[in-house]
Length: 199
Image (tube, rainbow, N blue to C red; front, side):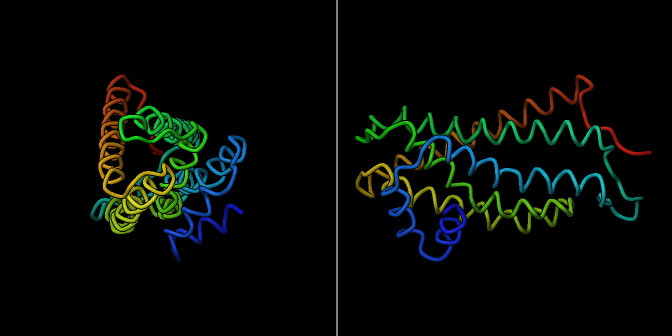
C-alpha cells in the first residue's frame, strides 16, 4: 500500500491524493510510513559520512567517526518525526481559518505524504558532496512543494483558491521550522556538540 502511493504521487498525483483521502489511515500506519521512508536519508547519510566521505577541492577525504555519525543520525531521525507531526498539527490548527475541519489524523497523513520526494532522494546522501545533494535536492524540493499545493485542497476538502492560501501558510511554517533547526544546529555545534571527524 505504501509503495503504491509513493509511485502514484509521481505518476498521477491528483488521483493519488484522492485515493489517500478515501482511505481510513490509522496513526499507527502513518508512523510505519514515516519510519520506513524517513530511514532512507538517515541511513544514507550515516553511510555516506562514515564510509565514503567527501572532499573539498584537492584536500583529503573527510569522514565522520561512527559514534559521531550515529548520534547525528538518531537526531536526524527524531527531527524527521517531529517535523511531520508538527506540520500535521499546524495544518489541523490552521484548518478552521480556511474553512477546513478535518481530523488531526488526516492532517498528519497529509504532512507525512507531502515530503515523499525528499525522503526518496535522501539516498543521494550516500555521496555527501554539497553540490551533488543540491543538484538532486532542488528538483525534489520543487516537487514536494507541488505536492503540498495539490494535496491541501483535496485532503482538506476546500476550494483550490482557498487551498492555495492554506498551502502558502503551511509552506511558510515549514520554512520557519527549517530555519529553527539550522539555528539549533549552529548553537549545538558552538557548544561543542558538533561532528567528530576521523583523523
